[in-house]
Image 1 (cartoon, helix red, strand yellow):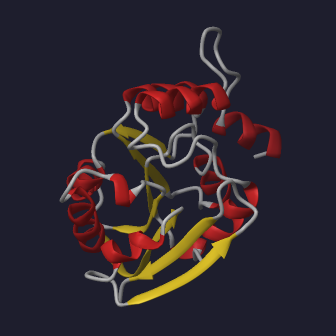
Image 2: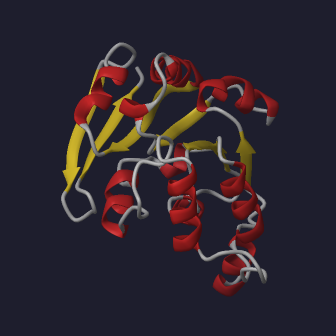
Length: 204
């Protein structure tokens, strides 16, 4: 398969009437500011650093919470094996519809739902567990109890040796990780607007 064929499978030209990614992201922020952590998408440097520790050869199921306009989706698909699956979960139906318009990779599944229901969503797509889960959700601004429920459900759905990858703009997210994950790596990405806290919470 040529590189051009692979690229064509991953994405297609944006249909008429569908906003561009920046416009779509901004619209999502205005409509759901509590659920969208930033007014602009993540930087390339943040994406590379966040995904750096992933063992792609051992990754068959990757889950992303809050994919937005697909800023991470495309880099993940570029790194994933041909038989792997990316499940993107977002509560905003506008983002899900947008992703279904612009990403046509057969390995990609977009789900309109809550990250707290990740176990059922993963099972609904034929899997028992996920290898990695990525989240940019603003945990500190979620409704009471939701962040805790997501942390617990994520720990249960990740296989032994897998990890919960989290990027945030507030270090408070660690409070949602430590009750479930004991081995947590941390770094910063200063070349992002705003600078981001990066966490890799390992299971087992």
